[in-house]
Length: 289
Image (cartoon, rainbow, N blue to C red; front, side):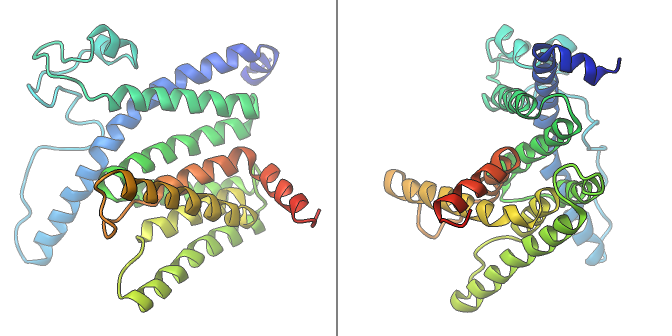
């Protein structure tokens, strides 16, 4: 009896394991969200220095593993018991154990969100290859969404490998056939690229970033071209409603850009779980099914 058969016989154990795994991964995602943009900026600075014929600045190794986790205020290394997802935040009452500097609420929120969405995926797909794949995609989308909110960036270091993984999974197939996945990746990228070019010709402004094209291509590779219309529709509707609310109820200026990645990510995650049902409901409503 393998692990999937054990989980199939005890669904509650599968959900519990998924929740714990999600919390642990959420803790790691906090590191990715914090450090990956800094790694990118450092790499760009080095490339600019090389192009200018200057010697790149030498500094301490900085990546996802080094330096070890530490308090950004006092630099004190974080002990293992201080790094338990959610639990440590509660035990420390949201403050550094050494200098009492408040720990940003975002850290436990990302951990809790990752744990919750992982449980939802496990409940929806059950013990299966689809569940494991959907968990990986969910974790990538959380990272991309928060990074885009912070920096207006959708790093290629995440979107491109996950897109290739979606294409490879289509060989099984897990969610989409190879034909649908390849067409989905191509159509997903080109559709937003064409909108971008048209908007730039009409307004002389750039309405979105290339990362948005790649994110929609990612969903096409995972879910097939059939899911792209609903993803764009849901993302555009949510983005428009949030944008209007920000203008009406906050001091958000009309010309201030709003990252589109989180809305694409949310719409794509919805399509991952309920996309076929949404498409079928729409076709029935339109009298086409």
